[in-house]
Image (cartoon, rainbow over all chains, first blue to last red; front, side, top):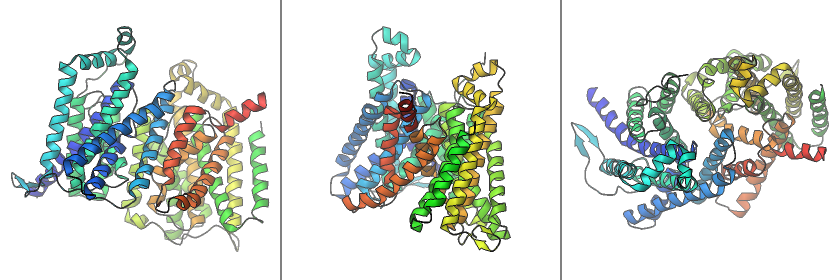
Length: 290
Length: 314
């Protein structure tokens, strides 16, 4: 019993790491543009499907991965330029619907390009399963966790130790004043989509060897990343990281103990509870109501 | 005052005449348009007039369908009773969920309704009593006395319900209730200051939208005679949003236009796209629907009907 729970926890850590990456994309876009991007999960789909199809065609896995991340980033750029920027005068609900439209359009595009069959991707490196206190992890799990360390490390360094990162923080803290200091808000909005898409695409690439890749994986991953972001308070990258792991572990343990069919519902029940009981997220401080 | 009732009656008369000439396949499409339009009217009351957002409307449609199907298959109840029960259960579900969802605004409301829609779909999938992932087969049809409904009768039933729905919604939006809803969408705080109880009105509208969806779902179950959870998923909720946006989110007759456009477009895409791209399979039309949704929101955010009423004024 205990061993199997430990095994579920390890499985949860692996998917949780991917949820954290997608959540980081949500947080970046939300922070910079105030927009919740419902299409976020599709970037992971584009990454996973591109890498899997290129590798199947014979390309070495790391080259395929690099091209896949670039493809996801390009998709993010196009989404911003073609759909978000033309509607920037629109209000909240309209923008929600636009990103919703992006989500189904990208999903349909995935169906056109890759069809309905799942594609598989070989693990980046071979070798036998890694044993952690009696639980087993596939070798690919190391790559998943390394990706999290690299991405969140890079984001931390960028926001804390670079001039541009400080400018982005200023733009988030107070857009009009940042703008008067010559901070280009619109350029930042563009790059937030590109970077969020690249991170999502990378998440899709590294998880593809474990879950395989399908055209409709985006919605599941997108919503999970969403829940993770809300768990983390929507405005914090460390929160996104924590939220991803919490969500991954809770859903895998609940799914393992009860039934995997309910896994998806567990995540959303958590989401609803958090929204109602603790809308500021697990790490956030309560905002006092005036 | 009765303009929407009159529109509904004219449409009903038109459909009642058309079904005698159309092949039964097209009659089925007419039924589909009528039922989807009914759902979209409810959605427009909640989104367009009250200024809220729901990405989970397919769940209420599904609750109506499953309630009616379960009562008919398991208990042998007539679908007429199933229709009433479906509406009631959808209303109860909306009432309970409103305590969670309606505390939230815009982004988070969209997310919460989307999540609730998916949770309800998981319940459909996992609850073996209502058929699990294989759903219900051989759902009994509607009957009047000894007459069992054929496709023509379903089309007439759907559009009769639509006429009633249009008439009722028309009265709602022209009443003090409707004006209070518009006040809420303009600004909840301001509306409250004028003595509008935003929370109560939003809840009542959410419940009303679920009743519209529940009734439509119940009729759909009997007409299709077969339902499974995949028919009530996230993509259907997106389709409802698309119908609403195409026709104009704050328009009642727009709901009918939006439903007709989406159903017609889906048929057109399903028949023409495989000719160009033989490999196209599955729900590929979502690609076009997504792009149309985006294009509408950028270029015609108030829907087709906004252009029509401008033309009338000019």
